Image (tube, rainbow over all chains, first blue to last red; front, side, top):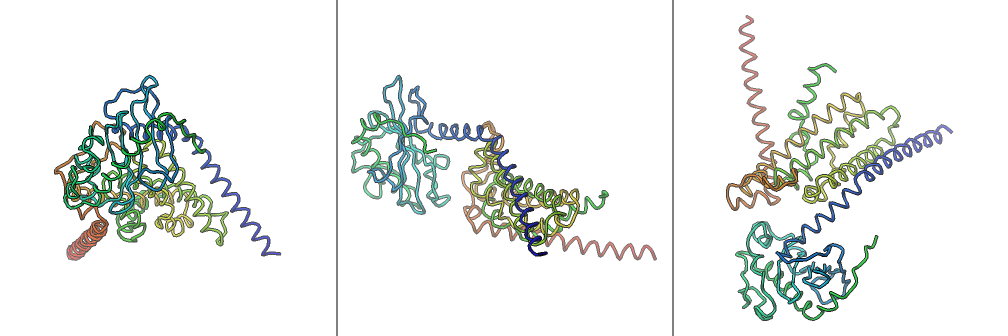
Length: 212
Length: 225
């Protein structure tokens, strides 16, 4: 008898504390939810901005999200994301978020902006785990490497030239790291080829609804 | 609590029983996050807040909590507090939150916090426990900042390089002294070297002080003669 009442008492205490803690978390969530959602949207729009350079557009970028589930012909084995950009309802550019799987250590998430004519408007690395000081020079804050792709397209250079110099291509590699830039250049080339083949579908498709 | 006991408690947390330097607790976040000073400040302040509130709550509830269920309750309290702090960081310091990433939720597993709940807060008054939390939290935060400062200075040749994550404006982005630094300092081995150096410096300092105190002691003895 004594044992069971002790267990009961412990259980009740545990339940009471759990309830109080849950209430605390729920209250904090309630107070911060709107701000967090606004922050997430602002961070997203801000992170997409560099790939657009100075293109004029008047559509909400984050609302035009198109998710392409695998399998697809874009780089990476997970879903690719495309943001469509319009000016007075005419398509002007598309932003691709794709993954290069063949980096030096882990996947590299790349943001690639392409205007309607297939010319690169800007490239940024969103996520990577490349070696600090070597492979991480692909990031725009670490070196100018990523800027060499602006204004290039599949016509300049032709497809065979979309490789690093060591592989006979036209793009600079990084000293001490060739695996990383090779992976990024290849992913960009494949994305441009995909855009070339699917341009009209991409701009005509309806935006993907949020799963939530 | 009188003033002398209060300063003694704070001193224990910051120096004598510093959770990182002496107890060597919570090393996972300490080693992983301290690549820059701003990261150190962020995680240090978050840990300080969690530690203070968890000490207060554990102490306040200590009379009702049976011994057998104390550990799950500590975990419950600490996990809830960490979740709240994480939400607050996400709402007000979104970029810093992204930089600290998984290490904010991982404060739950920082054994320095459970250790203080078990060793101190469950046996002392709420006021004492809060002071202990502030002392230990400050000690841990200062160590994070010191190592972050050291590694950033050596590794990136800069100070406060990501300060815009805290202030939210890009007007001031820290001081930079050179384009690149000693890479090793930012890589994981640099974290171990820095911590070892910090422990060694503390021990050397303590030894020197003890020696000079002993000498002072004999001198005062002589004087009393």
